[in-house]
Amino acid sequence: AGRAVQDAFEYWALAQMAEEMGRNADAKAFQPVINGWKKFFDPKKNLLSGKWVEANDWQGTFGVSHDITGLATLMGGGGELADMLNSAFEEEAGSDFVYTYGAGKISYANQPGCSNAHVFNHAGHPWLSQKWVRRVSRQAYGGTNPNIGYGGHDEDQGQMGGVSALMKLGLFSVRGTCAKEPIYEITTPEFDEVTIQLDPRYYSGKTFKIKTHDNEPENMYIQKARLNGKALDNCWIYHKDFAKGGLLELWLGPNPNKAWGKGPQS
Image 1 (cartoon, rainbow, N blue to C red):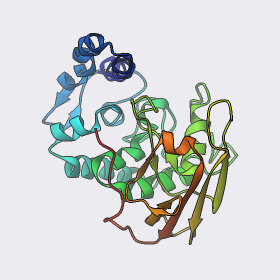
Image 2 (image 1 turned 120 degrees about the vertical axis):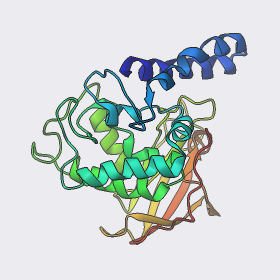
Image 3 (image 1 turned 90 degrees about the horizontal axis):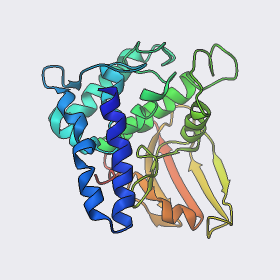
Image 4 (image 1 turned 180 degrees about the horizontal axis):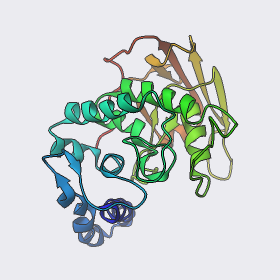
């Protein structure tokens, strides 16, 4: 199962590139591998089930990063997916979300589960991404000592540091910016204001700034957003807009605004 999930994402990324190059026959040829993960779905468990490397059914199921919509369909809809994933986070909420290989329903100590909190954005429940990203950021990556920070983490190629930084910035890409139209999902930043310097070799803009209003510890939910002064109803932005530079403003509050945040399209 683990190999099928990993291969599916990689071939999907190749298909995205092939389509952009006009090689549609190649993109079509990749489809059996792209959809290969589906044969591991167990309707009795409502999870993918099989053999995993350094993971388990709970951690691996939500790693179908390229097709959360397809996973939700198999599970009975976005609401069912969100309920199951939320129950796993609630069960682990008293921990630091750090487990050894293959243990725990949610583990931010190793690569297979490091996008799980952001999956809610793709299942129509962005307020749950806002909640759990903030919780994981503080409980798993909230310090600089072995007890809360990097204790027990498998730091491969800088991924843990990268995940931690992106959570604190409030930007992430479940699909690894591999889509033909790459996007960044929005969650609640840790900081009042962040300025990202854009490299002129690759970006037309100079800086992209993220500014929060009412950023208090208890205010983990986005109430409304503006991008360059215009109301933003999506819980994501295009990379092409990020590349131009600009200002993303987020207003926060203690209660979820379930009317805000349209999810990314499949």
